[in-house]
Amino acid sequence: MSILTTPFSRRCPVSSDSQSPFEPITSARQAGIFVHDTRVRQGLSQDELARRANISRRQLSALERGNAPGISLSRLLTIFQALGITLGAALPPRKGDFLM
Image (cartoon, rainbow, N blue to C red; front, side, top):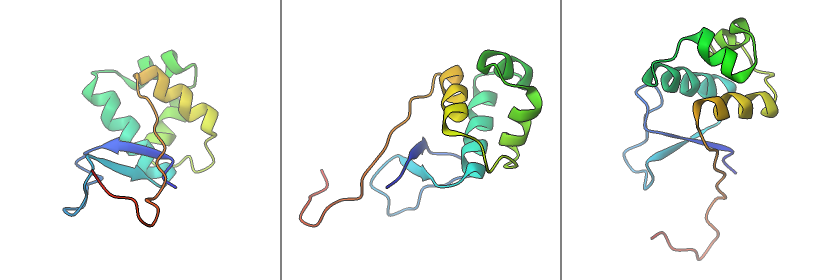
C-alpha cells in the first residue's frame, strides 16, 4: 500500500509507464524532498514554514535533507497541513480490477 503520493517532481520522476500523475512516497527522504520542493514553489522560507507547522527550523531542515527517518506521521501531517497538502492512500489493484 502506498501511504503518500506526490505530483511529478524533478527529483522523484514518474516512470514512463505510469498511468497516474502521482508517484508514491516510500521513504522519509522522498517526503523531505517533496516538502522542500513544495515550500520553495510556494515562496516560503524554512523559518516561515517551521513557524506555521509549530516545529523548529532545525527539524524542518533535517526533514528536507532526508535526515529525519524517525519523523512521526503526526509531525509530517502537521507540516503537510501548513503547506496546504492533502494526503492520499492507494491500495494496489486487485486481480480483475480494470484501470480507467
